[in-house]
Length: 224
Image 1 (cartoon, rainbow, N blue to C red):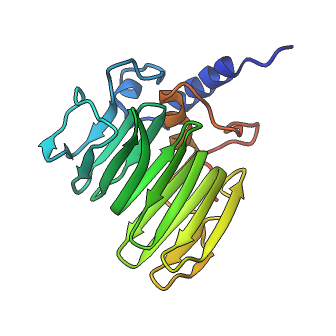
Image 2: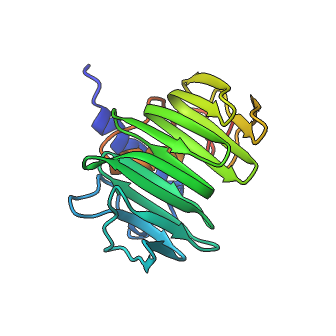
Image 3: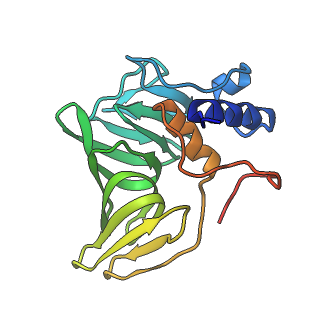
């Protein structure tokens, strides 16, 4: 039998909706399965406040590859730019920069960002680190003197500001790291993001995660 990834993704989303895993999204409340974002649309879900280039955003706001985004307290934005999709948490400031029509660089000044990227190269900068990315899922939290980086899947090159570099290859949240202002890259635990969120934002750009989320023993979000 030929494996159909689109059908597998559809079945997962149906199960996820039944379990309430996407309860915070407008489409879930409407009982609809999340789908790839249509052309000309950027924001899938918006809770609380989001400004784009200093202007208050709504679900019709289009986000471009050179925009600056700022979320307020108790806020969250789920959005797509090109082949990349993101969940920007509360109290976050994110600056996008472009390579042509695509996002190439991101600077997370503060806050937290879950990202899934297409095959082109990307880079995320924080106050303590630079993360080189190609076709991966990555979760980053940024504080003035400490960054958290989880390579959810794929390969990243994490560089501290003093030049210390570590390459991380992960299949499933295998090696989260802290990067300190003194240049130390050290092991960390798994925090503050889920497989379900990764699957949701991959779906918004027409892809799926490289791992299965449901099996016979599934009884809740996987956290590691």
